[in-house]
Length: 351
Image 1: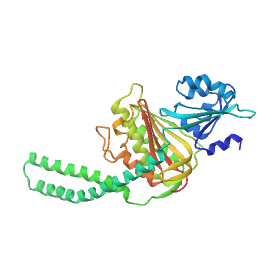
Image 2 (image 1 turned 90 degrees about the vertical axis):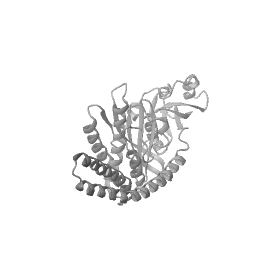
Image 3 (image 1 turned 180 degrees about the horizontal axis):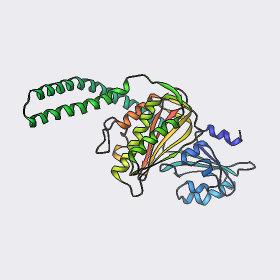
């Protein structure tokens, strides 16, 4: 293990720089923050990772060379999803290869653990209320369907039979919707050991078959992600719901450039999921270049029956969030026009 490998244990993004401010090495948190691999970051001008900022640009190289001691300021980082407010620290170091260490801390997500816990509580209450309502609706709905079938058997006129057929068809549609609301609460998880890329490949195949060639589906996997323990089918459904939601949004709202959906995997370290810290997890990102999540839906996009699509039911993302939370994980997202990223974050330790 090299000295820099120890920085991989930190949740803060750390980059080692040379005298000219070029990146020599980046820890895992930095690779996740900027959405670039170690190979892609190596040799890059570190200033290119940030939005134009005269205060940073005028002092950066001098700070790297030790003229300011330790430089601290706030700026905007160009991350994989969108520009993100960050705190930057440039600290010169006495090292044969590195001139300075650059630390980048997100300012936007300091309250993320509290928001995650609040979201979990809200969704739990809403799901329980919906399931209670669904059980209350299901029995009379069956009675309506049965009565319509009996009435249909007594009718001679074809045009009147069409009305009863509509009643039966709509009753079946509502019953299917109710079954989807009730289903996740049922069976316990069927835990198996597997590699997350088995799930990603299955979803990749399904989404490409359904939406290609209208949507280009890409893969960006980190082959070093270790195996995890989980319910394979529920995780497939969760990832498929998120990916299909992104592809449908691309087609419904259109894009100035060719619609592209990317499945990406990375290792996450020192995570806070729900109410517990996790040493290591896997981050599965679904990234699209569509118009983004409407501002009015951002605080409730995971709530049941909430949708921004004309043909949506509002259950796909809600069920995906529930399945991931059953594994001790969480789904987060960042969105702006041209780049939306939903992240399924799962602990590599058994929940």
